[in-house]
Length: 200
Image (cartoon, rainbow, N blue to C red; front, side):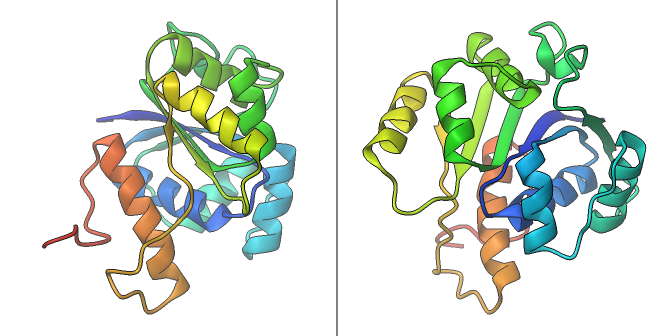
């Protein structure tokens, strides 16, 4: 495995972004620790044809079947699995992405709540000075949302709203998803050929 990444899904709209990112990370032979909020399971079922079953093993298999690769390693962590590597500075990967990131999760991370494994893993990333990327998908942003983003940005957290560009002349929803995922992969230091960079 050439890279370890924590990937959390929360209840904001934008499940296709997270699923496509998961696919690309596994194809890049990464070890990916996946955490799903309860709301994320609902959103995934609403926005895609993927219905996640109960049980860690069954959910891991469903996710791997959905992304369609046997490369990389997928490790599903329970929302209250406090013994997971991502819960400790001595075991957590050097990078974490919350994609999509609900404004509720954004607020909890900004306040240091750590009430579930997603929030705790993000807290670990911040306290250890590791890379944390949040992908909020909300509109419009309220002053509360913006203040939370500013607070986190000042701590070194990368705020990357799900706002795809159009200079690559997208022809499908998948092209728009790939734009965002390409930017995420760039920030994670993983080679990507999904979208040409500006000027190429």
